[in-house]
Image (cartoon, rainbow, N blue to C red; front, side, top):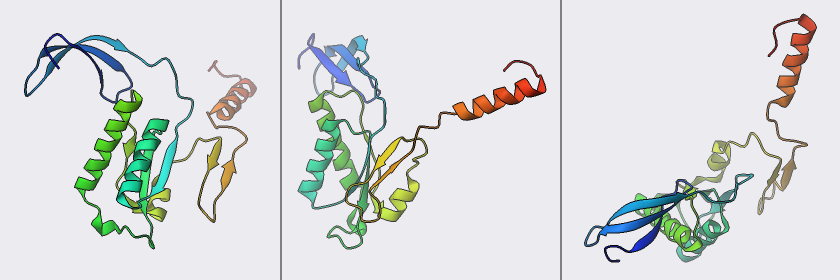
Length: 174
């Protein structure tokens, strides 16, 4: 990288930045020239609850999930697996974040998926807030396969009920 070069930058906020290098050396200084928002809008959030498996396979899974456009990753340590939670430290999580960042750059994504600290599966599943979904699919779980709702609850039913109530009572418009 040399002074005057144009570079593309992402910082995970959902935008792409075009910048010109002002100073190159041990540290690089750049000036943002333009900001571009992606031309797509996500219609749903995709989360993955994955087991912490052998290091190389787990890291490959992180990379591929990121390239596919996952929004968040919840790793869990199985009680009978070969990876034990006591072996998890901040350096492992920092490495996972670096792998995700590399995959974001490679796949030219504008947002970084989040990754949580590994927990026991029961704790992970109790901590995920799944309150507004149309279809929930579970792969690899004996006790859970799929769950559907007839529609998402966006508050329309409550709005309509309040509207009808106002009409019946003769109140001010909503």
